[in-house]
Length: 362
Image (cartoon, rainbow, N blue to C red):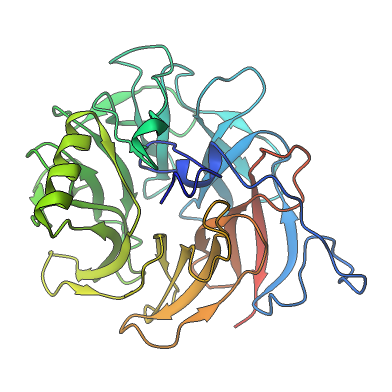
C-alpha cells in the first residue's frame, strides 16, 4: 500500500496512521433522496442514525469503555502537532486530554472497571513529536522504537510504564473477559503479538513467524484473538522487510486478517486477497469479524477504504460502508447495538478524520 496509497499515511502502527495523516480529499456526495440524517447513506443497511462525535482534525481508534458510556481515542487537532489520547462521552461531549501532551501516542484502551487506561507513547524517548515516515521508501508506516506502553488513571494522572522493553511496543487492547492484555512488541527482535495478565505477569509470546503481526483484539468471550499480519515469503520480500524494520518502518501493502486461539494456538488466515486489510474486530456473536479494507478500490492512487464483515471461517464476505474515502477502526458495543468508527465523510476540512457513532442493524 502506498506510494499508490498516498492518500493516507501513518500514525505509527497502532495505527491510526492508516487514514489519518493523508485522508482522502473528496467529500461525500449525497444522493438527492438521502435519508433525513445527513450522515446516513442508503446503501449502508447495517447503519442508522450516524452521529459525528468530533468535528476537527485527525481523530481515530475510538474504543468503548467497559461500561459502554465513554470512548477513548487519539487525536491531532488545534495546536497539537501529533496524536494525543482523549476521552469523551457518547455524545462527543466532555472531551478530555488524558495523555501527557508530549511525544506521540497511539492505541489507547480502558482497563476493566474504567478507572485506568493503557496506551503507547514516545514521551520518555523524546518529548517532541517524532519524524514522520519517509515516503520516498514507498507506502510505509513508522514503528517507532520509542513507543512504550503506559498505564494511567482514567483522568491521565499517575502515568507508569508497563513492561518496558527495547524496540516498538504498542497496539494494546484488553479482553472483554477482563483478565488479559494483548499487544504488539519488538522485544524479541521481530514484530509479534504478546499477551499478559493485567498486572504484567505471565507474559507470553503468541506469534513467531517472520513478519509483522499486530492490531490484536480479543473475541467477546475472550477465547480468540483477531489480528492483521504480513509474512514475507521470497528472499527479496524478507530483505525488504528487514531493511525497513532496521529503519523503524514496515510496508503494509498486503495485510491479511488472521484469527488464533487466545493462547496462540490454532492460527488460521481469514482473508485471502491482494488488498490492505486491517483494524479487525469481533462482532459480539463471536462468529463474525468487521474490518477495514481497500478491497474493490477503483483507484490505486486514491484508495477507497470501507468496512466489511466476514465469518471467522472466511465465508460470507459483506460490504458494510460505501463512502468513497476512508472508513476504519470499527468497534461494537457489547450488545451489538452500536458501532463506533472513524471516517473522512462529511468532514469540515479535506484532511479531517472524525469519530462516528451509529446504531447497528443486523
